[in-house]
Image 1 (cartoon, each protein chain N blue to C red):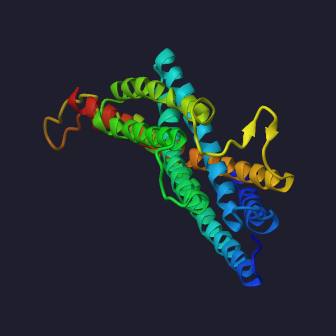
Image 2: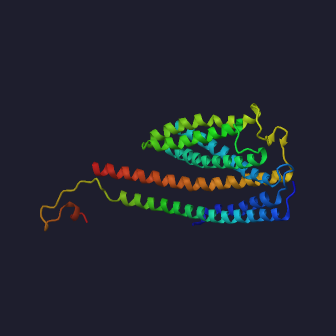
Amino acid sequence: MRARDWWIWPFLPLMWLALYLDFLWSPDDVQLGPSQRIFYFHMGAATVVLVAYTITLVASIGYLISRRLAWDRWAASSAEIGTVFTAMVLISGILWGRAAWGVWWTWDPRLTTTVILWVVFAGYLLLREWSDNPQRRALYSAVLAILAYVDVPVDYMAVRWWNSIHPVVITNQGVNMAPQMVVAMVVSMVAMLYLFGIWMAIRLRLMRAEAGVNELKNQWRTQLEG
Amino acid sequence: MRMSPVERMYLWFLFLAYAALMVVFFGFMVRMLRKGRELEEDLRRLREEISQQHVGEKVSSAVSPSVPGRELSRS
């Protein structure tokens, strides 16, 4: 690996620190005991979901304005990773819900809007496989991504707008947690965002290469036919 | 709800297991980044090669094996 990728190296100590804080340093919850630790993983993944889908939204708008495929690659990469992290949020939420509420699943507004978000963005990824024409694919995907993003603020506000049993951690009065837990949560969020950044770099490089190969194939075909 | 020493030890095991998992995952990401960069470099070279090949250029054929055509006389 060349020196240009030096920025990846702090990830490992940062993730180790986050794991140490989550598992060993942070205190047990009074009611939930050690199962509270799922929350740090859950919150970190949820933060990535918010960032990832926001990047998809911005890149989709960017594509519709400029019609440059580089925007589409950003949107697609971010949506792919966001969908994986949404699955992580759902799985960790299910585990936490079993410990906290005694049930694996309930159709709570927050849980329901999160499932809808995951399904809609999974549909976005399926739609991308539908067309081989890059411009057409980018256009339809951008429109769907903008429509799908409507669920992101709804998901965030669901616990505030409707009766929900999902805890509200970040309020207007501050963060409803012990200071040590807040530290563990913030470090987990930073580590997860770092992971997202690395993953984006990998995915963007692959997508750029894929687009370059397709471009060369088309160029070669045109030359042979001409 | 207080944890017993054994449960506390389980947390250590969990921490070590996840830390080891992250090492493997990190190695995979480093490898993928390197591969991605190599792929981009290969693509750049391929693009250069193709641009020098003049695939679409039409050349007249040689009239006989002993008389070179334009494509041979040029070199």
